[in-house]
Image (cartoon, rainbow, N blue to C red):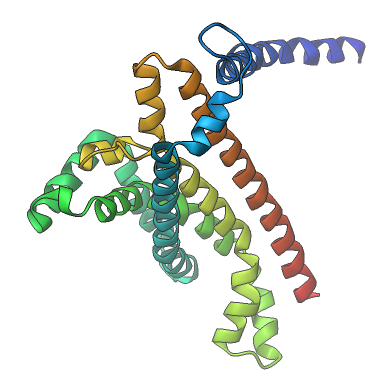
Length: 266
């Protein structure tokens, strides 16, 4: 038993080294540059500068608006799709689900380039509808990440709960809103997290469709390209804090809604 414990500890050493070198160390460097100036002196001017600069605040709001809109559109498209797939009687249901995943196997640049050509044929000059094109591109890229967790949650629901609700007089609509929807909240929350977080910082889609100047990822890159590591580190640190807060909030929502749904069933 003692030898087994030593073996387990030894196996954990590579993971600890990996976390130390590639997670903890870069984060420490990020914090150092965020709270120092060019002379290495401690300062909070980078923090106050972020919240007093109209450019950074505008970029943050624009990124947030794109991420929220993309998440809402993906949810509105994904939930009916996932529900129909989960409740359908297709003999090869997995094949249909695979059709939604297959585009992800194609090179990312090729997919966005093809989408750009389609939008150009429809709209002409893409610069006329930057926000719309950004949402379309993001939705096209992240929709499978919303469908899959919702589908996996719905397909695992106990059908006897819905049958019991119908036996007690509930119609299809009532059974859906009181049983299926509350129990599918964990999948919805997971899908929201998987779409919102990358949509907040993804600038490649926007850059290929028109211009990614007003997105957080591109703004951080522009700071580092201009050798302003202190300002770029602060923006990255603030964005990391927003992402962590969102992750904790969605985790809390998942736990709360899951408990509420269980209580309602009891």
